[in-house]
Picture 1 (spheres, rainbow, N blue to C red):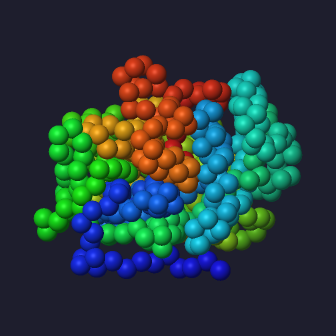
Picture 2: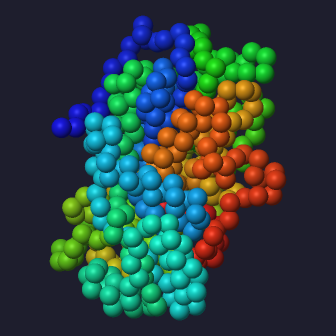
Picture 3: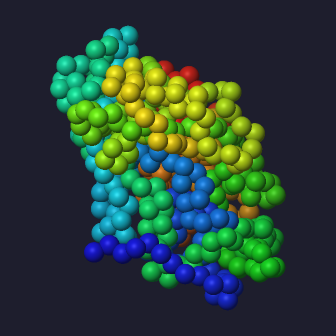
Length: 408
């Protein structure tokens, strides 16, 4: 039986050194800590708030394989497999729920759709090609009449992002890691050309020759004093929760609506979560943290209007709340996962909305990188130098053509 994801740490137990220090207690940092302990390292995880208090806690928490690039599909497929066995791997629950995934293409995009379908199937994703009628039979309540074809991935789903990060952290603690909440990094200690530790409050120092910055939106600021400039900006994303009206016939699947600009998924047994597929440039933010994470009433209404074009019954949906968050994004919308700056410093940042769904596999790969000091082949595409070298990640089968960041 799975345990409850809890831990207890007191200041007197702060270790003076560790094999590795992970800065950031979101899904990426917690996954890295978990996988490092599996490799036998002593680990300290520092979190300025509480575990999952940053972008992870604001995540839409989709677990899907629908990517336009091979590297994205491969990481997503392995991560989905981990979510499916999360309890067996960690001893804790992440509340993963299989819903299935649907997304359609209009006639003008059919050639690109077929290329993407072939790419997904070739990577082992169990996709099905449906007609508009077939999609509406599968998903009562969906208006797919403008679609020429629909892709269905029956294995996709969603999980509880807070439970996921907490489960990784608790499993790491069981294996000997120390989780320090309400403990912000106050700077990386460097000796010569290598990292030597992390300073925390009270003048305390945790010595370590391996440090992973996985603090999401805070990572660029932590890396900058070390001469590391990360090509990361900040984008606002809004999510609304809508109560499905009485008579809504089924629990809906995840749906990507490229044409009306929304993504949606069920939220529990009665609600639907909906957000924008692409961000509004007017919501680009200079700061990495919002002073108010509530969602505006006008935004909720706008999302409901867009969603109802695909699910007409949702025009009568009652708003049940929502939130706003900030994404750390790179120019090609894929993360930077690399060894940078002084020897022993690693970053996993700029997740661009992919962090939650990729966290199991990225955590495993980062742990291998840190432990062996050799970059795994699957992380080659995420090297920091790709932008300087003019080699950003580009879709292998773009569908549809991109016009700005897509963030679910």
